[in-house]
Length: 417
Image (cartoon, rainbow, N blue to C red):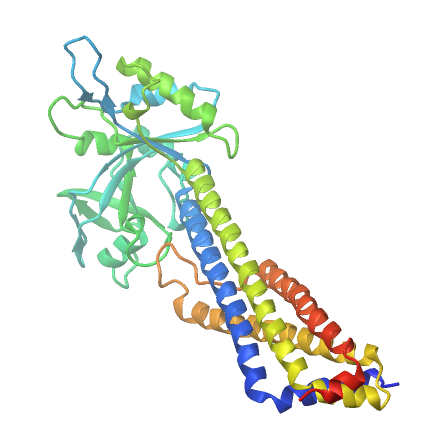
């Protein structure tokens, strides 16, 4: 009776004897597995990149801007715009559905000058709790406080790109800049957020909201003198904005005299809803790719079955001779079964290794260079799932040809050409 080591040696001898066939079979499976894992890795890169972008905005943030009051049917009133005001903010602060509220007045037509350089950045009039609602990584100095707001101080906190442009290689705390000709003292600097150099949040100047309203109020026909660009808030319930959004709609509708049930009247961005939508999209992508992977591996198993059946046919006389010399059906079965299983599993492991190395190279060269996208990385659950499917496919691909080989009668096998 042959030992397992002898059978295993015959398996490798048979694979070496058919080098090209073995190589092409293994290459096809490795390519399919590797491609699948790279696709899953790319999807996870997009998912994590979008999550990072949302985290750079803040945690559970809903942003609201001025909208359009809808036209009333059967009345002589047309659709007209409205702006948010401090009265809206005060009403929202009283809502139990909200845990934090902050108002913003921003303009982009501003010009900043220091003694070394000049630039044009977004200037934002903000309140102290802006850093509570939004993600504001302070790296130097301090942020705006209540006394800045109360005394309408002319102080500024600079974003990283604005700081670099206005103070290239120079200290900035306590230095003077002018914004549209008005002097401001720099009291702090914010760290970088997001990916790449094109993130507008990195080129901004934050000043007290009251100072912004006094010096750079929003201008235009039928615009209130205290108009705000945006009101941003966080729901009281983490990860659930439905009740908060409905309550805010009721307040804004009541303050501006329109039906809050008209969704088109509101211009808003709910990061919680966006996060859930992104997760649903990529969950669906994972399911799709998983289905593609199962089909791919199944086709690979069919290919191996065909190759193994061809191998059985080619080696019919060899099988007959071995059985005539005393080889058992079990040893023949084991040899062909192991051949199919080894071909499938080793090919899959090679595909996993190559895909992991390829994604590692992409991480090295692409990290931080593609805004909104993290480089692909090997998703271990997909690798384990692929390897498990390969083992199953290898068993299926090995059992049928092996049983065909083991069932051959020695006399019949020796008689065949």
